[in-house]
Each structure stands twice: as C-alpha cells, then as structure tokens.
Length: 442
Image (cartoon, rainbow, N blue to C red; front, top):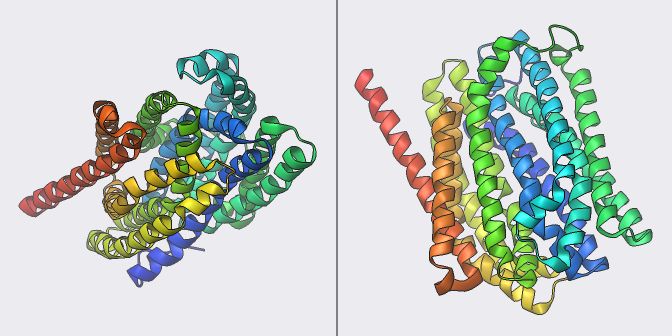
C-alpha cells in the first residue's frame, strides 16, 4: 500500500511522519542512557567516566552509518515518488550486503587496535581499562547497527516511519531487562552493560528485517548473484557518501574535542559527557524533524511537486521554531535534575548545568539549521550539506582551542552554540542562491 505524503495537509503529514521518527530517536537515546544510568548508580562515577571516555570513538562509527543511510533514505524516497518500486529492492539488498561486510571488518580492526586508539585519545589512566573493556564488547554490535540502519532508511524512504519506532521499542525493553540482570544482579559492571547493548542491537536488527518481509513484500530479497546491483551502488554512493563523509569528519572532530575535554580531567569528562547524553535526547526531536522534512521533500521532488516541496519548508520552519522553544524551556528547568539521576557528584552536576545554560538558548538556531538542511538534502543537494557540516565543525574546534583560556571547560558549550549559527547561515545562504538561480533560469 502506497504511503503517499505528496498530498494532503502538509502540517499533518509532517506530524504523522515525524512523530514515530522522534519517538524512535528518543527511545534510541534513552537506550543509550540506560547503560550510563545503571552503571553510574551501581558502579560509581569512575565507571561512568570510563564509558564517557569512549563515547566519541563509538559514535564515530555510528554517525558514519547513520550519515550514509540518511542519503540512501533520500534516494529511496525519490525513487518511491517516481514509482520505481523495483529499484527499492535493489537499494536494500545491495547496501545491506556491502555495509554488512565493511562493518564486520571495521569491528574486527577496532578490537585489535583498541589500546592504541584509547592511548591516542589521551584517555585518563584511571579509566583506561574500564573504557577498553566497555568498548571492546560494543564493537561486536556495529555490524548489526549497519544492517538495521539500511533497512530503516529504505522504510523511511517509502513513508513507513513506524518500523524504526517498533524495532527500537523492542530493543529498549530488552536492553533495560538485560542491564538489570547483568549489572545490578550479576554485577558484571561495564562489561555487563556492553553485553546487554549488543544483544539488544541484534534483536532490533532481526525484528526490523522480519517486519520488512511481513509488511513490504516488494522489499523482500534472497541472496544470490543479482543481490548486489552495481548501478544502484553507484547511484547510492552519490547520495550516501557526502553525508557519510560529513558525519565521519564530524565524528573525527568529536574525537579531537574528546581529547580536548579529557585534558580538563575525569570530573569534567563525566559531567559533560553525561550532559551530552541528556542534550542528545533533548535535541533529537529537532534532528528527526529535519529528517522528516528531507523525506517528504524528496518524495515531492520525485513526484514533480516542487512547489509543494517549498511549502513543506515554510510549514516546517514555523513548526520547528515552536518545538525548539519548548525544548529550551525543558532543558533549562529540568536539565540539572536529569544529570543528577546518573549518580554524579554535586560538583559534576553544577558543571553539567552550566553547560546546558551555554547552549539551550540556541536550540532555535539549531532547529532552523536542521530544517533548511532537510529541504536541501531532500532536493538532492547532499554534497553541499556535507561541506556545510564540516565547516561548522572546524569552526567549533577552532573556537574551543582559541578561547579555552578565557572560558575554561565551558568553552565546549559556547563553541558548539556558535557553530550552530554558522551552520544555519551557510544553509540559508545556499537556499537563497538556489532560489535566485532557479528564478533567473525559469
């Protein structure tokens, strides 16, 4: 059955399509919270710092996967809008096989070179072994996440945003249960938390594959000589590589920033990485709303409804402003309480609260940036979007180092907020240039 989001009320389409994305994103981040929450309260702040010290490295691989598959989702949406349904199966089969093989190899290399990587990150000695134990197990789950994300991307492209929500819901429930068993009852520490995570990820992946086979017969495929389509791979890389490179560079930059943050000591590491966990949940509705705009715009572009795609941007801009203001109030009022839940000391909680104050007032700017990014990516402007993200990251790193002496550890938040202004300015200027170019040639 066709999930048509190229007709009807735009605001309603945005709400109905993005609500499951937002809920699934929230569940995924809460899923990431669970390990930190239980470990922090059962094992203490040192163990929590060990998990936090590995966050940027693990997220490097995750963001590359998510970045690449976001491009695949736009391609699938455009194909769906063009009603080229048979090509959707080739997109799913080709990239499932390719990403599966690539990330099995990456996981193996990560396990082999884990000591060198953590040393390169300047991980504090007193949390080095904890971080190593946690990360080594997490690497095993990366191939599952690659397969899950390619399935999720194609499903989003055809307008089915319920599947990610349902699969992550199953994953989150299993993860909580296993965390309680492995960490609280059996006292396996960070190893138990990591084991619970990879088991949950495996179940999530199996669930989304079975869901796809049951609900969307057009996407069902069997392994064989025609599983990988070279033409589809070429087209997919044009859409997927720019956001993957941008995500990879951003995550590599985060590794630089992780090293920068580690230099402030384990208390700052525990405080700000925990604050980032909370912040990542708070801003997820903004990120997923932008992804929803990209998918709806892409389907309309594929169907030849360019005017309607522009109306999606206008409506989405109004909606994101209201959403962002609500999230700002939420984090300013409750941010400190949320950080305290993770078992941090009073001093660390104050560091985290100060971090929130430095960025929360800029959520509206970030929301506008994500909405314009969604529109540009939906029109196929993936390369520019990736370049803009890289420029924003470089600004963030430069500001962090340039003003560290003036603002101390709070420069981490100030630099990120400033980079959002830069990002929005770049996207908005690109939008104006494309609009004027279109008007001049029409």
